Image 1: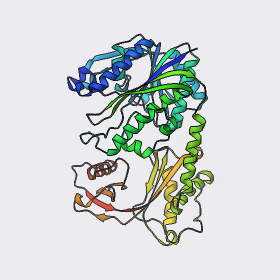
Image 2: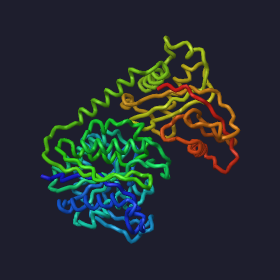
Image 3: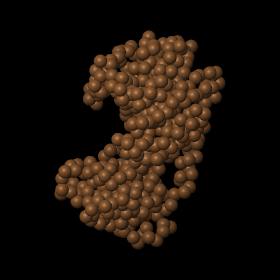
Image 4: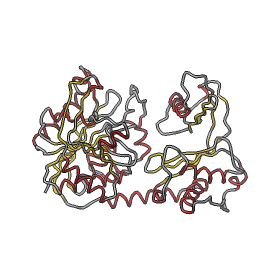
Length: 468
């Protein structure tokens, strides 16, 4: 019977590697010390295999990626340190068991092989999310096989369930295994961050690390998705998988360090595994999720409820829903542009709208645009019936656009923007998570339109009446 020995949260800034940092790594000495502490801990346990879950490998929106090459190798050449190079034997026996257990639970798995590498033009090299933590581990202990996993943008609960599948595979093997959740915390931690700044970056980091230190799993999986998104982290989903691997165990958790002088949060923590009790939190986590969705449904106003019912009706009946009776009078008499946005598990699932009204009233505008958001957004596959129970809706009713002469007239929290150049145009709604400056707002709108910042484009602004 195999054993999960311990788990670790480890950051992966390339600058922490001396061959890359060239002295700059000394600014995060606490993190270096903690990573060495973790690595010595791993050496003492002498695992047969180390599993790394990384956010910088083969990340798909709809599947977890498991690498199936017999040999796993990479270097830090892209960071100016090509001499930092590793090659590991893939534990294909454990990989096979992980894939098998995951598919039993209907968790979508992408096996990264030569076919997928060619289809998606992917690199076969290990990513820095894997390389950096293992740089420190191999300084102390190197006689292990590796399992390389990249999380997908699946629901947090499903990532947790994937972690349970990993542990089931470990227990059915004869391996002693260590698990590393690779990930940095907020990328907007300080005003000097290259990703911008939000005070919620520090709030996110402190909250997550405090919850981890007390193993308050339900609160971690149920964390506010707006806060997670605004923090611009890359490690939360790795943590979700790790917590699933620890499901049913008594765990002693310890946060070893947290710092962020470069504007990115680096947290190091270790999770010592004790007795396996076998009492799973999974059912409770899914129940809490359903309760949260039901609470949202109960608070819907007429605009949001109409958007939801329109899409549900179309998915089930393949035709437009008639405009219902009993709506507020302004939804029958008023005309306006309307955007309908769909979110699923904290991620955008579709967004389509009209800048100026195309139909005789707001109600018809909502019905049509809700269906379009679910079926015509080119960024996503059409919504399927099984997804309906998890989709959250928002409806933005637009004021007529007004021309802008100066960027000083803009405010990304109050105004949406439209940029135009000839037949090209791009729109961005106001008050979006992570869009905090006029420059960010215009930059995103320009990218959507395919307009270069150097071109002579026009700007319009509008306000919205938001229903969510």
